[in-house]
Length: 445
Image (cartoon, rainbow, N blue to C red):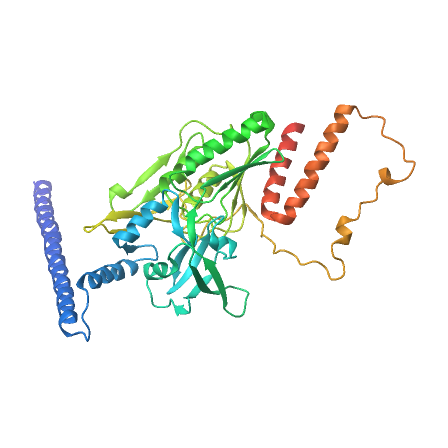
């Protein structure tokens, strides 16, 4: 009997607790809604007072848009409001052609910071670098402006010239960079065959990226005489500011046979997703080196992180930018849009690269171009090297067949080409050397 009574009392207690549990959220929700409406009333009151009392007439539409943009930019550096024109420009950019300087920027503590210049654009030709801070445009300061306002100042008619005042780490004084605006046609992918290595430069992730990757590799394989004619692939993602998430997933999938590529996690279940690789590898398991640097951001970090976690590629270069969030473009009435951060993304191992970046497996800095030694004028480089063969009357090598001789001459030509590449692009030359070394080991085995 005692046990029955205890059970009954316990049941009653649980029932009372459940009733309180239901009522609590309802009361909290009512309180939250009331506060929400009070804040909207406050906003309306401030707007009315500005319209009636401010020293000059104001445009209510501009005020509301500025308020919305301020609300969004207070969240994080990548959320913002886009007017109809700005939203249209963004949609055009994802298709791979637009007007401007060819520079990707973000905002850091009120300053405009260069993520990276795009390949073959006026900004790249002018020498803009990742990490540069733009303080003035045509002598007008940018501090205090929103990112959209600063970008509007960078834009202008094709053929017009803008002067950017730049602060760069390692240089004591700000300096001016004149850039002439042009139509920006960004080739998402360019592919070359270098010393039996496919070198594929991915400049951005737009609608043309995956088709460019597939077409470029197919053409390179044809040129090399098939898969047996190549030793590996270099994916150059340096100064790639990112772009479309789905394109990053497609490119990663192009070199993975199975497993997770990336996961996204937001507040709502619809923002949570996992992208999985499907069968098929464009280079059939050939070794891959991925090049990254501080200008590699967002979608390019997804590719680098996925291939690194699956041990499908060796990551070479310097730490990437560290943008581990996903933005969704949400249309709003009037043709505008808001770019809102809706999720974080995670690499297959579950790591977030937000503010940390992807760390390369092998750190390789890109050395600055070395000036010529005073008085040398490059004469020593042009002087032929003294070898046994250069001596008068030296004996010929009688152990080589004609085929072996041709092969040695081809290898010497490749070595000379590699040495020249080291002067032009040390990081790329390093990546190619890694793949040549892996190919030599595989041949020996």
